[in-house]
Amino acid sequence: MALKTLSPIFCRNKGAPHACYTLMKTMQGETFPVEYWAPQFDRSLDGDFLRPGLPLPIYRALGALGLYHKPPVAAWTKRRLEQMYLDSLREGDIAYLWPAVSVELYREIKNRGIPIVAERINCHRKTAMRVLREAYEKLGWPSESRITEESLAIETEKMALADYVFAPSNNVAASLLDAGVSETRLLRSSYGWDPARFRFEDRVANDPACPVFLFVGRVCVRKGVPWLLEMWERAGIQGRLLLFLLGSMEEQVAQRGARLLERDDVVIPEDTSDINDAYRQADVFIFPTLEEGSPLVSYEALAWSLPCLVSPMGAGEIIRDGIEGFVMDPYDIDLWVDRIRLLAGDRALRARLAQAAGQRALEFTWAKVGARRRDQLRRIASP
Figure 1 (cartoon, rainbow, N blue to C red):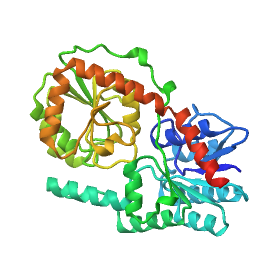
Figure 2: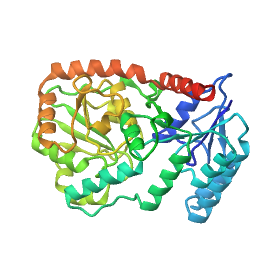
Figure 3: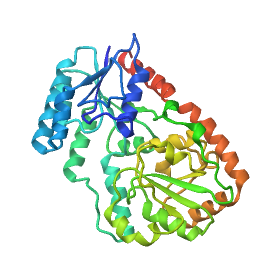
Figure 4: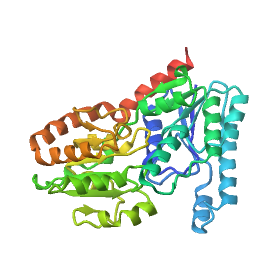
């Protein structure tokens, strides 16, 4: 048996590609060969299991000419990668498909009788559509969601064609069940964190009377940022809110939340290239996100021993209410304000939650998560 993974986006050591690469690296072994197919890989990544779909000179040339993401070229490179991947599959292999793979590839693999394991990194689109519709309605804003009925139908077909689906949190599992995926096809799992990714010795010693509350992610409605800004203003504590922006800022949040974003105690760094710079400055992790899968930033916050204020979606599979922090309804502003004030003023509580967070994180290193997933795949391959 060989586990052959396909993720049709460039693999860099961050976000979902980081999770895919690290899982494959930890799962590989002489008795469990793996392959990871992607258009190309960042030069910092290595391993004889990497399978690039494009020669590096061609990939670089298309990028330099600004052609790689143009529709005709993007479609050609994706078709090429999927065909190379399809040609590699043999009887006894497991096709492990990450998001953005075409539904046509799902159909062809299914026709060949190769078992398909899908990775669902976020909730099913059916759930995501409902959550985002409610969020924009609460705000009274025009929706900026890019989820269409067509994309929902495609995802539903993919999940129906998959023999098994990895659900990295109970939130994802619930969304898949709601979309018609049976419990018998779910592989309940988690994500993880990589100790080599961080420089814990660089941690900043903040003034305990002026704690830093850290948010990491895109500044957008989906991540709950409009409510976060309201919570912060109403809490009125002596502290700082550090918004470590990953990706772009949603235009409506930037415009409608300009006054709150420009507060003296709200900090938005210009350089977010080094994730260490986010966690090293923080005393508390705050993440009222509305829709997620099993967010990597939550695992990493625990690894840095940060007390956590999170929504159920932000808690993923790992943050427990009252143990590593507090898990709260993202729309319950009054409760969030109370918890912000509580953690800002109670250093002993912060210390207790921080210790529990660091201990909890040890159960979710990628090495342990990869071993657990490898055992799950072996069981389904040899029932």
